[in-house]
Amino acid sequence: MKAWTINKPGGRDQLTQVERERPVPAEGEILIEVKAAGINRTDTLTRQNTALEKPYPILGVEVSGVVAENHSEHTHLTEGTRVMGLVNHGGYAEYVTMPADRAMVIPESLTFDEAAAIPEVFLTAYQTLYWLGELKQHEKVLIHAAGSGVGTAAIQLARHLSEAAVVATAGQPEKLELARELGASIGINYKKEAFDEVVLQQTSEHGVDVILDFVGASYWEKNLASCAPDARWILIGTLGGSTVESVSLGKLMKKRIALKGTLLTPRSDEYKAELTREFSEACLPLFEEGRLASVIHSIVPFSDLPEAHRQMEDNENLGKIILSLDD
Image (cartoon, rainbow, N blue to C red; front, side):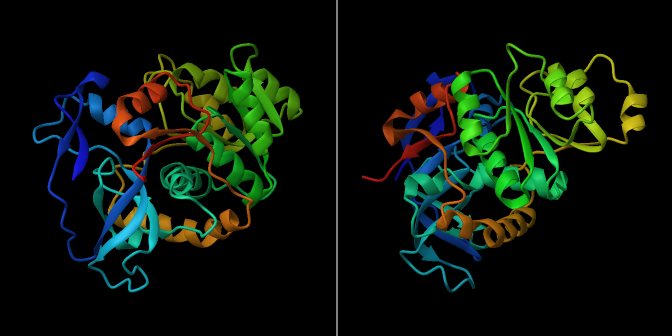
């Protein structure tokens, strides 16, 4: 089968398409004929990871496709069933294995490309907002990187599951326009405005209840100022740096702020399976109803993977970049 791996850790020039043996599913797994794969920042970081050793993995953690073999007790996953979900690497290939309890049956109204845009970003957003952020009905949430895959998913979930007031930040007008279309009530261009000042102005100096933070160090003081008492601040990225030079623990304590850090990809199979189950029950019907939707920036042919990684690394995307294998 065709698959994408790397010659060695490094830039996009190290991506290489190879021929590999079709994987054999273990007990409890399914084999998927891949139709589309989502591009994620974790893929570009894996590509650059100098700690990787040979043999280098097939990249990709998110796919949609059809069941080719079922070696599990999940009898509804018959051959030909359309599924989507998270895999433990191997998504950039014609076939991949997946734990059967992480497979989600694709709603009939969705294409394979639309389905591949769901698992990583919506599961990450759901975990961050609800398992960690404990977002409640009608609370206020600040979502950074509003034009990203996780950002667009989080805006939709916050609005449709919690009727939350969403404050979104981005650095481009078109990303803020998209955020408003998806349900954000306030959009802030962080290149032109101090977002903490706008947050406080728009909340009568109270602040927000939950922060979804992709940025980290460079936003530390502004995020801290934006927090309401008892706020839950969830850190899921460090695009703005990972080291804060000076931290006032007293300010955190005074506002009773809960600061949590998380990454979804390293979580256990059991954690991802439970997250998948809960998300499927709560949210998949909303895709069928049209209340939730995939947001796709581009669909790139399988042979053009380096271009897909370029779009991700240049921060061009509004929503998801999809690698298509479906002829």
